Length: 222
Image (cartoon, rainbow, N blue to C red; front, top):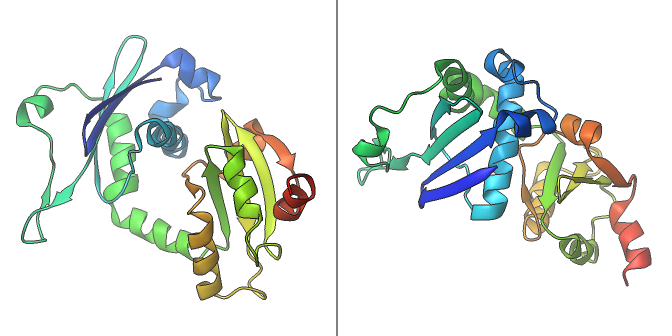
């Protein structure tokens, strides 16, 4: 995938249909299956984040151009104006004009990011006790394993496309919301959130440590 950073709030990337299929997606399904198109998008955004430190925060303006051999995607984070009300898109007008887009993909992504349904989905996710955190380097996970009060969390460690993914399952009888927030804050000092789904990780990734990740790491890396 080719990535170009336009400015602080805008990134453009190109992905070929061959690359899409190598990632386990069918070329046709991304046009009609909203769930799969969103999954592909978040996987690409994870890669953009790793390479460009671009965070997909707040409302996003997304344009998708379908080319002969792939897709070109322009993603811009909206900004609040000085009055704190109006959302502004920090993209020069000339860059936004006459950009052909594929409305099918754009509508699917727009529905996810900027609709009431998306808000409801996010609220449901916030109540979930399962989380997935990704790490660039294995050393970061080793350092995290030496922190206290982590062994009561059910954990599994995976590798997928050059990154490490830590799956966390909090027992609601052991942890309240404040406990979870505090522990996640500690973990996010070493890793970062990902939108890649655990279903994709289990299907295409490799299990490195199936249970008790932190305790197992301390056995071998003292």
